[in-house]
Image 1 (cartoon, rainbow, N blue to C red):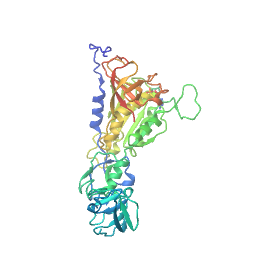
Image 2 (image 1 turned 90 degrees about the horizontal axis):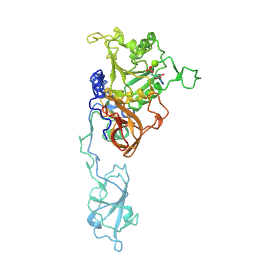
Image 3 (image 1 turned 45 degrees about the vertical axis):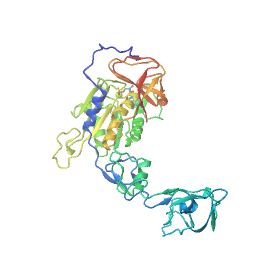
Image 4 (image 1 turned 90 degrees about the vertical axis):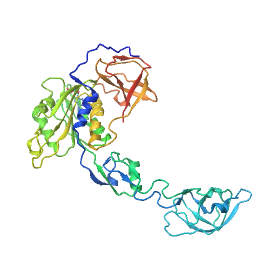
Amino acid sequence: MTSGTRPGAPVDSSLSTVEAYLAAILATITPLTSTSMELAAAEGCVLAEDVTAAVALPSFDNSSMDGYAVHAGDVAGAAPDSPAALPVTGEIAAGDTGVHRLAPGAAIRIMTGAQLPAGADAVVPVEWTDGGNAQVAIYRPAERGNAVRYVGGDAAEGETLLTAGTRMRPMQIAVAASAGRRAVTVRPRPRVTVLSTGDELTEPGTPLVPGQIWDSNSYMIAAAAREAGAAAYRHAVVPDDPKGVLPALEEQLARADLLITTGGVSMGGEHDVVKAALRELGTVTFRKVAMQPGMPQGFGVIGQGGAGGLGARGGAGVAGAKRGVPIFTLPGNPVSAYVSFQLFVRPAIAALQGADDLSLRTVRATLTGPVRSPAGRRSYLRAVLDGSEVAPLSGQGSHQIAHLGRANALIIVPEQETQLPADAMVDVLVLP
Ligand code: AMP
Ligand code: MG
């Protein structure tokens, strides 16, 4: 199974591991300021407080079924051939806030969610009766507490129902509403701007001349950022002109909590304008990460200190100093950009929100076919995960987008492996 291992393979110390690079990024991220948000607007935000139940849940004894509120003792001997016959003395619907009392030997018609009348200790479902209005025949006994939801049976008053760091998804919003909250203290969706760079890029839908390609990265990464919880905007394509890159970024500083560029960070060359432009600032670090795809990465914080320009350091103490804006410079190949986003940007977006769910889920699965990987680099191979089996897709080149639409997972091939046979067990990153 480990036939591809080469224990003697040299470790390239100029490369960061995926973990070390991510840790350095997360150490730099400061969560956004929390704010009170109406429940209706809180979806996708992350709690910055615990949510406790304002009252016991439920707050009154009530029926869990449509039927008849009774004294259990009055129906103890009921059977199909000798039903208990009880007079029906009233009806309580859900929302009825009146005071009702059940007399001994009687029944009160009751609906799901309606208050249990004083004196009653069980509800007989309508299905166990003849459904009578003035009088009801009951064919089965009901134990004390049958079909009754007691005060506090779900949660005690003051009980913690949601904890800080929880993302407000539909069910969490229901819990907060049920706990009596109209608004919650949350960290909002980070505002993310995505800029693609490249002279070869043109808008999808416009005619293509040889030498050009349609820009897919900015659409993809903006969508991925939204999926990861951000409020993401796509900037128009930025040409390979160092004089154009910095002003485009600067313009976004006031309106973004995070910036993402794609392209222009390759291993050298005068056309790598993002690298050239940002390196000057000294606040963005370019690294090679021991992975494939996505080896060239850049991350930093720009715009600290307000008026001092993009890279001004030492903003602390400066009047009006603003917090810096984290920036990711992702590689240009679409697959590299996508994998880099999922590994590094997604956790950073979550960290800006103070969220618990930093990373994607990993599962173990069996390979259906062999895979290859460069020595010393961790591969992330596009794949289709189906139950406990994972099938690598053909065409794993970083530029090969044709099969990207079928992938729902990434096979992780560890650094020390250069090949794995079919039937090997692997870790698989489950894509959102
Ligand atoms: P770069 O990182 O700028 O050297 O680009 C690497 C490769 O990715 C080149 O083949 C580019 O044409 C391609 N590429 C760069 N940006 C984009 C984009 N926004 N959409 C699609 N492909 C891109
Ligand atoms: Mg380029």
